[in-house]
Image: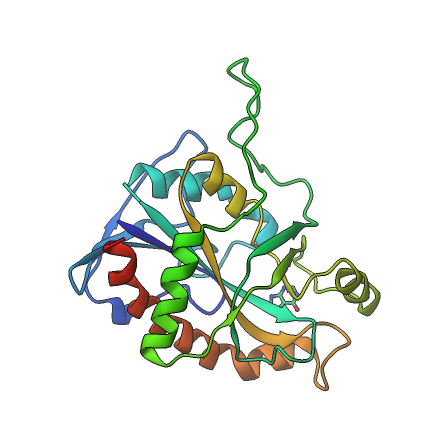
Length: 246
Ligand code: HPA
């Protein structure tokens, strides 16, 4: 099964067709919503909106451990995390789709590991390359095949939210080498790695980051999110058979 985590603007995906809701419990409590399971063009998929079906969970309240555990328990072989972000450099415009290859974690106070020592063991995972290479390649190839523009390679800054950033914070993220800013990229990616789940982030640029755009951030999101999400949906649908046959 290929799992898709939906973010802001992608809490529901009716065009996926008839999917069966599966209630999954985890040692960390319930995930954000029942996992919607079914087949899309013969490929088994599971769709989970990380903020809940009615978008009721802010980024710092998401139970990332329950979400990722539920995907693994349901038999996911790969996870695509669709994530709405702001862009920092001028060449990444609102509406763009980006395939990040690195992440910097600025979040705090989130339950960010399955390896918290409760069983008396200390474990560390490699996270040098936080996103799965084969999954990223499948998304790149799908983008070419379906004619959706995709920017390959960027560093995602995961911020705490739910407030947006200050101009000085965005300047700092830029000095740190970050290109995208979003609130949900971590600990999701690290948790997937801990469970051995190949994970890639498909970032949907909804706005220019604070202090970088002509409009306010929220006004830009309003203006660009829907078109970006529609392109991301096309791309994910084109990628599914490529991932399934890997
Ligand atoms: N900052 C943080 N998270 C976001 C943004 C942003 O500008 N846009 C969408 N998610």
